[in-house]
Image (cartoon, rainbow, N blue to C red; front, side, top):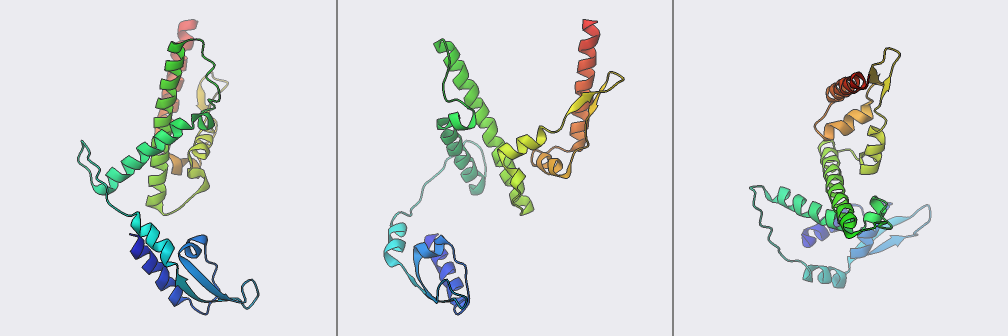
Length: 212
């Protein structure tokens, strides 16, 4: 609610009159700030006047909208789902940035349709990863640099298995604390990684046996 937001900001300003404050552009958007000796060592915030025209213009844009879902969920989940869909659509329009699709390079309509379909599925997966990472940050109340989609993928790509002298494949390194934090967002743990490594090793052993 914009009015409650302005009230909270106004209360904050009143409580910090006569102090040196580093106020962001959000305050300057809604208030004319009067600052004593701004930019000097003895700078002090004096008071702020509400910018009524700006505030009234934003209030005029406020309203209600209804989201109807086919599944039972609370309002917060429905809004998150709606926003994630909107994010997917925006990503699809900008897929040349995220998926390197600057040119189609397709020789037929069938190939073009297949490529667009794969890109759309990839964007849905990417958005799901983004949502889970964001949810994990909210749970831990921490905003880590590695909890973005590109950074998380780069970090998880470091988990590798290599062939040892006995012909079997083992993990090259133990799972790091950072990787554990990322995996936790997907409901996974180091145990899942170990099991996956064992399964891959078994599959590779079977394939090598067939070739021999």
